[in-house]
Amino acid sequence: MSSIELTKTGVEGLDDILNGGVVKHSTTLISGNPGAGKSILGLQYIYNGVELFDEKGIFLTFEENRDDLRQAAESIGFDNWQRYVEDGRIRVYDKQVLLRENDFGAAIDILLEALDNDDYERLVLDSLTMFQLFFESEREQRTYLLKFTDILRENGLTTLMTNEQGTVFPETDIGLESFLTDGNIFLLQTPTDSGVNRYVWVAKMRKQNIDSDIFPVEITQGGLTVHENASAFSMIGEDGSAFG
Ligand SMILES: Nc1ncnc2c1ncn2[C@@H]1O[C@H](COP(=O)(O)OP(=O)(O)OP(=O)(O)O)[C@@H](O)[C@H]1O
Ligand SMILES: [Mg+2]
Image (cartoon, rainbow, N blue to C red; front, top):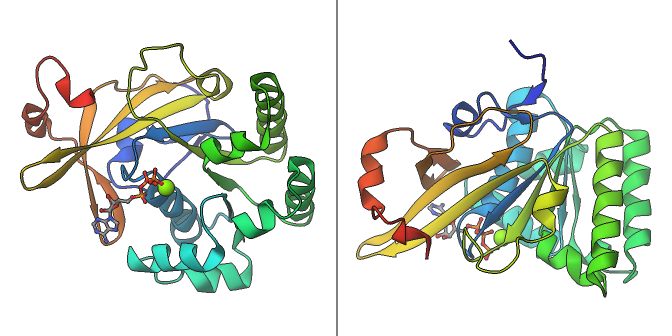
């Protein structure tokens, strides 16, 4: 038996393949190609926190403003999103707030104020790709990312960061971000004649013995559902060609 504390995502099927959830106070990267469902998973993680586990959450988005985010949440069926934002159980920092100063130090200060006053347990950063644009050199990105993940850990947050990544196995060197995070979950979508097939793959989860198989995913009203039935695997070529 392990004594590692876990945070449930509340996403049907995902906690099972994670052996219970993500490691508490860790940072997990959600990588995947455009449209794969990264942002929806982030919304769902924060929303479920309040709705199912009575845990407050923070959503940082460099991609959208708070009205777009509200619309996205409501259109996927998270009907109480706005209520939770208004009563402070969900805190949103949108691109207008985060990019106001054009200085990440200022954005961190705003965030720290919130962390001082309240007990938030979950955080989403959407997306790391945009976050990195704050910094000029890779060295600076690395330094700030390390500093930032430390701050989140020290404040008791369990974090998901989305990351745009087209291929599961990059030809070139592995991005620095995968060294800095505790876990790496890939979401992928591939076109088919009738629409898209979606998959999830838990590539890495520090301290956790996870199932490294690839599982089919569905996005419907209510968000993502992970299916554990192996039959859908037949949709993936033997050579792994689904991974482009
Ligand atoms: N209500 C819904 N029912 C079914 N599918 C939906 C629904 N709402 C959104 N989708 C699908 O979810 C996907 C969008 O997911 P999301 O915005 O989370 O992707 P993403 O990985 O964040 O993409 P990007 O890299 O462009 O930000 C789209 O493919 C869309 O078709
Ligand atoms: Mg997105």
